[in-house]
Amino acid sequence: MAAVQTSPGTDSIRVPAASTPMLRPEDSRIIWLLLGAAFVAILNETTMGVAIPHLITDLGITALAAQWLTTAFMLTMAVIIPISGFLLRRFTTRTMFIAAMGLFSAGTLIAFLSPGFPLLLVARVVQASGTAIMMPLLMTTIMTLVPSAIRGRMMGRVSIVISLAPAIGPTLAGALLDTVGWRWIFGIVLPIALVALAVGARWIHNIGETTRAPIDVLSVILSAFGFGGLVFGLSQLGAGGHGTGADAAAADALSRVSLIVSLTIGIVALGLFAWRQILLQRKDDALLDLRVFRSANFSLSIGQMAIMSMAFFGAITVLPLYLQRVVQVSPLDTGLIVLPGALAMGLAGPLIGRIYDRWGTRVLLVPGAVITTGMLWFYTTYTATTPIWIITVAHTVLSIGLALSFTPLFTASLASLQPRFYSYGSAVVGTVQQVAGAAGIALMFGVMASASASATAAGADAISAEAAGTQAAFLIAAILSLPLIVGAFLIRKPADQPMGAPVGH
Image (cartoon, rainbow, N blue to C red):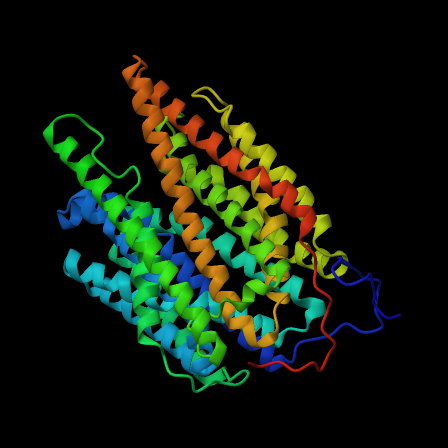
């Protein structure tokens, strides 16, 4: 029986078909290889937070200097992801994979051999350059190779990667730090990355067509100052001195100046960047083609994703601080508390993808938004005496709500575009996640610090002050999540493209 669809603009209602489109074996190998490479890159990215205290001691550096190992990584991602859409059209799939894994492997090797902080910082920038290309390459390849009728289940596999890697990363880092030292965080990843590079160089073939458009240098510069300035400015929110005396006052003043200057430069540069792209896209030469936003469904999905990323990344960054500072559990126990949620989110991905393929977005997005919003409001009730089992269950339920949302949003957003815009759409998705996540973390850290300081000034003890700060941060996340319920009713699953429809750029 053939698939039956409603009128355009509504979710597809699918019934069992006589045959299900399948991937060719060689295409399936490429996707699995890209999934593995992305897993390694994200795994490495999530280990650094746990290693920071050890690096401060081992390298004899300040906490502010150590924080640059994550800030520099984030800035590099913010600069490169927006131009990845152009790069994926300008160069072949094989070339981009070798470049991404080559840079990541080189950065990992430099980090492993690094004698001190300066070279380690360089290594993190090189690593980030490869990581920034990998996820857009994965998403674009899936959209190009996978038949539209089974894209949901394939995107569900992507959710396994982006859920399990952050769950395993901190635990793996903790074990290595307690036994063989911080260098082996990179040493254990390096051979895996090299194997992926070698296998990919042999297996991956070129997908789609390439363009010969020249790289617009002015656009690259504006993109770097725009997205980089915005992310750096957001990272300065709440980053001043949290103490007393002249040094803390000077740090606060410097942080405020950095915040204002960076955000101003970022906003102005982004405006000029957008204007430049509108001019260039008339000749199909844009670095980031903004015509992707002509699709209302894509724009709505991106807006939903931005709100969810702000609330999600902010909340999951505050939660470990709450557990360690307020509930007074160890870092290892903190990892064990959040692990069930990450596992549930990853393992649910393929099932959610199949539901999307059959029933569309609303059956997933509506309950996902309700669960996410409800759990974030529940987070605002956390105190120093909240039982650990309640926190674990609540985080697991929140993770399931997020899983119900991210997979259909990834798939529906990119499926709303013409095939020649897939690479640009993937770049927009990555950029929005990066910038919105940074904004959510910065906003909630700033609110948390301010509320904690106010509680301390009012005479609260240290634990009570920290509890007040985390409650205020969770309240912001809960308020941010409210529009998700409305957006869940507006986003649709685009009609499946017929088999044999032209792909490429």
